Length: 284
Image (cartoon, rainbow, N blue to C red; front, side, top):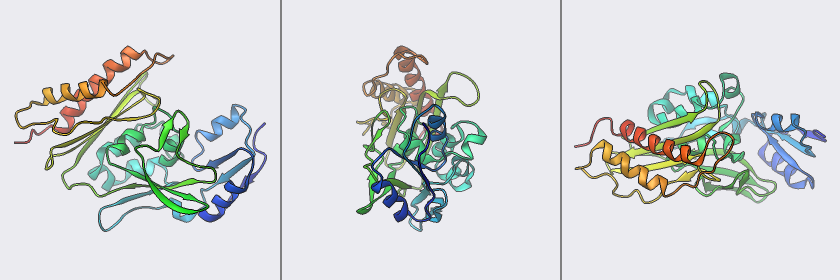
C-alpha cells in the first residue's frame, strides 16, 4: 500500500516521459489535497510525479489580448486574491474563495480541482461560463481542449495515459462581461457543494451563459440560452426562464448529502440569484 516510486521532474517533457513510460498506476502531484487523502485511505500508486517544481506551471499572467493563463501549479488562493481576476471575473474569484479552507486553498490548484473530475467541483461552473480551455501536454506535444467536454463522468476526463494539464486558459471576453458564482452547502465554512452555479452575462450581446454543478455525473453547461433576455423582460422573468432551462438540463440523484428534489429546488434558487446578480442594473 502507498507509493512505490516518487519522481520530482523540473520540465514538462520529463514529467510526461515518466508518466508515459510507467506501466503501473500513476498519479500527478500538484497541490495534493485530493491525492494525499487517497493515499492515506490506502490507495496504492506505482508512480507519483511531483510537478510543483516545474517553473512554467507556476505562472499566472494576462496576455496582451486579454487572455488569462493560469498554470497548473498556481494555488487557488493566488487566484482568489488576484485583483485583476476579482475585477474582470468575480465569478471565478468567488469560486476560488469558496474552495475549502484557507489552508487548503494555499495548497490546492484549479488544475487538480478539474482533473479530479468531481461533479461538485467549484471551479468547473465558473470556468465553463468563461469558455475556458485546458492546455494539455502529452508525449506527442501540446494541445488545447475546451473545458466543455473535458470531464466525461465522475473521476473520468479526456486525459490519456502520460498526459498532464499544464494550464487553464480563459479567452478574451467582452469588456462589460458580468459573472457570478453561488454555492449551496450543508454547513457554514468550508464544505462540498450540494449545488453550485455560475453565470455570465454580456450586456452588449445580451448573451447569458449558465453552468450548474453537483446535479449530474459531471458539471452541466446549460444550452439554448440564446435570446433568453429580451428588453421587455424583468429580472424575475429572466430568473424563471433560466430555471426552466436549467431544470431540463440536469439529472440530480438522492445521496447521503441531499435529495434530488432538494437539488432541483436549490438549482431554481441559484438561477434566480444569478439573474439578480447579473442584471442588478437592468439594461435599457
